[in-house]
Length: 265
Image (cartoon, rainbow, N blue to C red; front, side):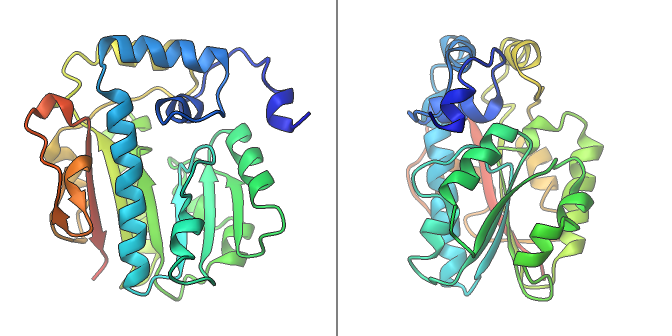
């Protein structure tokens, strides 16, 4: 029996496993599916938004790799899914190094299982609300060279930082920790889509240990303060396609997730 299967009796849902369920993955438990279904019942577009967010990350990692980035710090990496950061990046640079960070011990354990024997990738426990502890983590420091540009990924994680000040400071700390030429890949749930957020907020606060929030387009843009935002800017995840607007989202309510990539000058 795998460690994941052995933990299948856990009662509490987690955001990471709910996200896996939205993506159609198999790394989730009944409690996760029940909680996720409660969200989907109110917001049917959520699974599509989750898939669009994942496609955004894949496209962004590919673009950064093509720009010469050979090391990534993925914070809030969640459970292993198809096209993990290291698998996408290594199609371009086989020597790419990746440090995965997540708050969920099960997500980290599953990542370590997948990464077993991979000397160029690691998974560690860490909280985006304590960014300096992530930057200073011995395993992160062992693997990544902070004197060279890093691709920092904050995909669908900052909406689990309810206080705007804390989210702003977390990003600012991470920006200050990397050298010029580093990139930030960020996505965030949109106020414009979740106007009736109380239903979703209630699910996450009652059933998981990761209460969430939503932010407007302007508030998400503010997270990119100090960065040069790449084209096409901060847009719906469905619209972000390797630097050009792709699938248009006609209904703002169906977008779900704001996404963008910024470069530290």
